[in-house]
Each structure stands twice: as C-alpha cells, then as structure tokens.
Length: 312
Length: 276
Image (cartoon, each protein chain N blue to C red):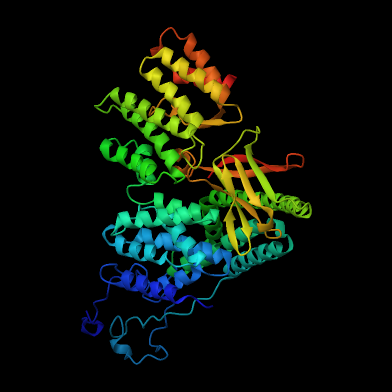
C-alpha cells in the first residue's frame, strides 16, 4: 500500500524516539502499529488505536513527552486515518498525556479541531485535547475523587477549558462542573466554607448566561445549571432565592429536557446517590413545592426530595 | 557405606523390613531369589552380595503389571470420557457440559495414573475408590465455576442473538429509507419510558470508515447517502456525559427496541441501561 513520504518519515522518527534511551523501549513495534492505523480492515484499525493508547500508558511518566511530541507532529499528516488513529489513542490513554511543548501541542490540537469538518475526527481531536494534563479530564478527576487539596489549581484547570478552549464540546461541561465542584468542596469541609457556595453561584450565573446566549457549541447542561443554582441557595439558607430560581427554571424548560441528578446535595453516603435523569419541568415544580412547604430552608432533606420524586 | 565394607554376619537391619529400591513401593514384600541362585545379568559375586557369604541374594525390581481391577478402572474412565466425547458431538446444544465432563474424566485418568506411579496409591483395589475420590474432588472444586461460566456464555449467546435480530430490523429500516430518498436519518435515543437519553453517541459504518452521527442532545443525525448498505449502527458512551458515569464506565446502553415513525421521519431507539 502506498503511503505518503511524510508518514514514513514520522513513523521512523517516532520509532527512533521511542527506542532511544530517552524514550526507552516503549514502542518496539510502532511502525507496524501505525501501519495498522491505516489498514483497510476496520477491526485492525480499531485495535491499532487501542494498542497505541496502551503503549502510551506503559511509557514511564518522565519519558512520555518525547513520544507524545512525535505523535503530535505526526498529526500534520493529511491522512485521515493516521490523524484519527493518533487522536483516538491520545484521547483514550488512562494517564493524562503531556508534551514537551505542552501549550503548543494543545493549541495545535485545538486548531485542528476547529478546522476539522468530519464529525468523527472532530470529536476524537476534542477528546485528545481534553485528555491532556491540565485539561478537562484532569480537573474532573479531582471532582470525581473529591480532591480539594489544591483548590486554586483545579479551579484554574476548569476555567482554562471553558475560557481558552471555548469551542470545545467540553467547555460547557467544564463551566457547569466548576460550579458543582465548588459546592462539593464546601460540603467536603474546605476551610473557605460557605464562601465557596457563593463563588459557585457566581460560576453558575456565568454558565447560565453564556449557555442562554449560545456561547457553547452544545447546550446540554443548562437545565442542570438552573437546578443546581437553586439548590445552592438552599445551602446558603436562602429559601426565597431557591424558590425564585426554581420558578424561573420552570418557565425556561420543558419536560422534553432532562436533568441528570447524581446526588441532590453532595454527600459521601451511598444512599444519597440518585443517579437518574428527571424531566426538567417536573423536577423544578416538585422541588419548588417541596421547598415552599419547608418551615425553614435548613430543613431541606435530599432523601425526602428523592422519595417525593420517586413516588410522583 | 559401601556394601562390600560391611562385616560378614552383620546385616542391614532395614534390608528385610523395607522394600529395596525398585520394589515398586506397593507395600508387598519383594520376591526373593532362592539361596545360591544368581540374579540374571548380575556381575556381583554371590559371596559378596547383600547379606554376605550365604546371605540373601540381590533383590531386583520387576516390571509392574496392571492388575485386572486397574485395567477395569482405566477402561471404565476411558469409556466414560469417550462416551462424553461422542455425546458432545451428537448433542451439540449441551456441548459445554460434555466438554467439561470429558476434561474432568481425562484429568481423573491422568491424576490417578500419576498417583499410582508415585506410589500414593499402592493397591490395585484402591484405584477404583481413588478414581472416584479424584473425580469427586475435581467436580467439587470446579463445578461452581463451570456453572457460572456456562450461564455467562448462555447469556452472551442470547444477547448476541437479540442483537442480531435488532440489527436485521435496523437494516430493513435503513434499506427502506434509502428507497424513500430521505436526505437524513434522524435517530432519537430514549429510555424505556420514552425519556430522552443524551449519554450516547451513535456510530455508523460509512465506506470506508466508521463515522459518528452529528449529535444534538438526544437527537443524532446521519446523512443517508453516507450509510453503507447494511452497515451496522452501534452505540458508544459519550465522553461529555456526566463524568460519574464516564469515569467509572459503569453504565452501558443496549437497544431494547426500535421504532421508525414515518410521519416524524425519525427512528426511535429505546435504550436499556445495563451495568457492565
């Protein structure tokens, strides 16, 4: 099969880089592997992408950058399958990848993402971009694992994704989950206390405004943002604020839209997990009625709300 | 100590109590040659043989013969193994059980043979009981795992057959759409209660590569001209879905049923969430 000279050159380069003392014996079969990325057989191509991701995961952390550099350079190849294969592999690594010129690599991926027309390649490049160190999957790992030890770093990480890479599909997620993360940090007992919930409200307000203005390439979290903004008010003891937010939400959404609830209010108890989608309008209505009935907002009980929603 | 150095008359006290090396270790007294006779092939002078002048002759190993009981046990196990092998061929729907039985019997035969060879089983009469014990032990150790494996395999096969059925149904719909000259195929992903699901990406085969449908929430759009004839459509978890689901990869979706609503020109995929 004929292959452009550039590809061959890059294959040699990556191969040399990976078997050099710096790269270690990390890609012993890379030329063959990359050839498989271009295979005419679908299964072989898919397997080659997975194999490349696994190979990257096996490279010692301090030796990963040279191998990634070579792969990022190989993205200049015009071959769709090579680009897709590398993007898929970089998006699938379990370890957050890092390049020597990390910023340059991120910008290159983002630029390719913006230029790509093919939906599959676009998504794969976006996944690769956000699987890098300091990008979405890095910060969301802190969120998922309740890491609040370096709050400024995680906050910057989330902000960076939606500020500097605003056209990424992950930008909407990053903005929404920064709001969630700050509330979670408060519930986990961060010394900044309730100021974090106030800060979270600011982030949610920014998110709602941007989302309603169509600033994100997708809009899947707006209803969720409205809902959790209201629940934040309940944490701040602002019953009136919560009711107003929920009433506003009822006006803006329909039951065709869905709100994902992992937990109403973060807790480490297993029975607090809801893990379900709810029709947005119905959720807002039931929650508002529930909050209105409470004598004071500090009587808000997530378990009661969960039970109420399951009986409706 | 070299036997030739032993003083005459002094006899190794163990010589008559224990079978000598090569006596098969079956607990029976080895056969002794009559006094004065010479062991065939032996170059030792009878006077200097074990026991000294006029003592006991050299004891030599003899080839062990299988007893009739042992023959019976071996034939029985082999017959059962072969029987299960033939049943395996004839009744294919029960193939895994017979494969399992065949392996167990074969292992029993090998293990009993080994036990017999190392002397753990010494009497031919114990061979039958030993075989039953070994088979029962193997059964006891492995039967639970086999049942579990068998169940998983059955489930997988049922699932695969269901997937094939759905794929055929989907292909019929796609073929019909191509005949209708629709420009786009709209796929809507919903749960079993017909509520939107936005966690998935729809992938489809388009010559020569696999593509991802353009996604707007729970709506997925595929240009029909890109659809390869009969190419499969599959689902993948969207990585921008809630991170609690993506990170743990605990949730998967499978198609429960599909409906094509001609007036709305949309294919509705009813998805069921399963734990992986």
